[in-house]
Amino acid sequence: MRIDVVTIFPGYLAPLREALLGRAIAAGLIDVRVHNLRDWTRDVHQAVDDAPYGGGPGMVMRPQVWGEALDDVLGDEPARLIVPTPAGVPFTQATARRWKDEPRLVFACGRYEGIDQRVVDEYASRMPVEEVSIGDYVLVGGEVAVLVMVEAVARLLPGVLGNPQSAEQDSFSDGLLEGPAYTRPVVWRGREVPAVLRSGDHGAIARWRRDRALERTAKRRPDLLAALPEDALDQRDREF
Ligand SMILES: COc1cccc(Cn2ccc3ccc(-c4cc(N)[nH]n4)cc32)c1
Image 1 (cartoon, rainbow, N blue to C red):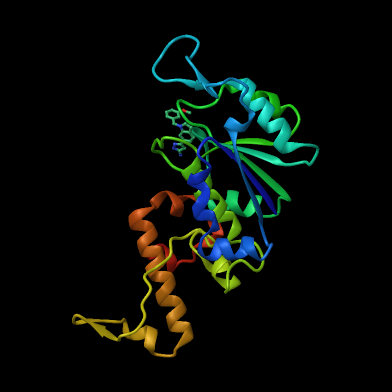
Image 2 (image 1 turned 180 degrees about the vertical axis):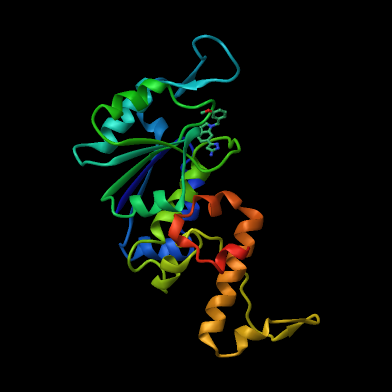
């Protein structure tokens, strides 16, 4: 997969080069290219923003610079353009699973109050464009959202995670939240690991883990429980 990121703060994307993701990039599993939007400005001030038509607080990013940059970065290679915004469709694990098979993702990181809408309209006329939110809170720009989405997608790519089973069995894969996890020592500050996890009874362990996941989901995310398909819960599950 090739990933391009266009931003006025390239340094914000440096964490992609660290740790697991950094190793996957170094191994050529992912080709990540970060571009500075200001490289496509033509004025001495390298202006990328202007006052909003219709008034209102803050500034909006100008369409011309974005058009020059995206035309250049996109070239003739087909891609999916992703624009982070608080006003976007929620990014979920299902989104990450859908994007993991894409040959190329291009992320447009806005700042200020966002990017002139005509940029999205222009590229949506010739390619898939998704305006996406990573949560119901407002960031200062799209870069952190891109870090989140790139990590969520990259970990699903073959060879990126040491243990591919983690991606298949992680939270949300069965629609439930992950239950509690434990490791050594057996007792820590007087708190003991649940005995069932040390019993060697894999059936009992699987049931215990599902019960804890159901309990946690019912308590913290009843919306996920309500969204499960009819046949996802058996009679025993419904006790939570
Ligand atoms: C566009 O409307 C905006 C209104 C007020 C502030 C901002 C700031 N801002 C600029 C670009 C940008 C990109 C993404 C996000 C963002 C995404 C999520 N989930 N939260 N915040 C925020 C961004 C934008």
